Length: 304
Image 1 (tube, rainbow, N blue to C red):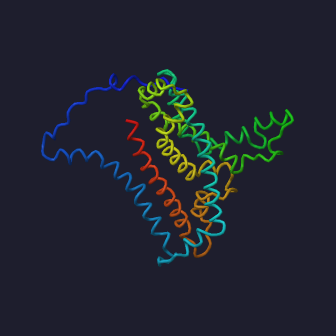
Image 2: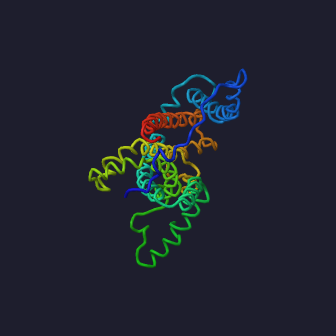
Image 3: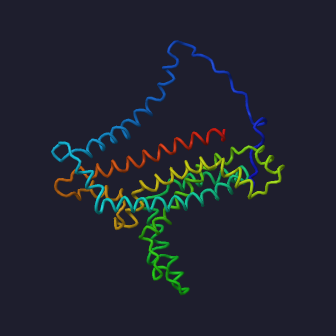
């Protein structure tokens, strides 16, 4: 499928006013003043709590230094929680990237008003989760959900064939409700910046639609797809409310384990175990952010 892309860059380009120096001394410093509220927000809600988690991961209950928290966090049930979180996140990412890419390609080829409506719907759905989403799926695909009852009346009970909404597979399906729209929002921009000249050049050389996407389209979009996959992975890895409301903590995911520890389910001498698990999540998110920055820079070379 070749999308009806934007008009040629020459027709769409607008003259940019030349940059000029500040009209008064200190204009550059004044231009940074608008970023102060944002920097304060980042510092108070992200940086300071992250530093507190990192420091607490190496502290005993009495304030001394220890590595025991990290040792406990990487063995037994807590190691299993990291494995389960990775399994859920990888499965959710693969499915969301495929479905999101197909949806983004379809939306990019629609008209202006329809595209704006679909993008707005994606924005809403990408931010929908937690208890309402869990309840909606329980009422639909739960043990006595509407869809489950209809299938049972037709002679096919999914729960007798191994399916369960309250499992990693069930969570993977539920997560698609907000991960697929998020992938659409991430990819719709790069897809719309495709240059018509690329399509025309491939067509003039006799390339079919399949050959165009295999040899030109997907390689160009690959860094953007990787960036989107990283964002999807981190979103699935850190999701808490939906999984907790749907499974009541029966699946040992890392966010659920941390929530249990924060709620007071702590053994003697393990008051900072939650910080150690949080440090593990910070390391995973930091690694994902590094991959995202590298892939987004590579994507920007082509998609401008």
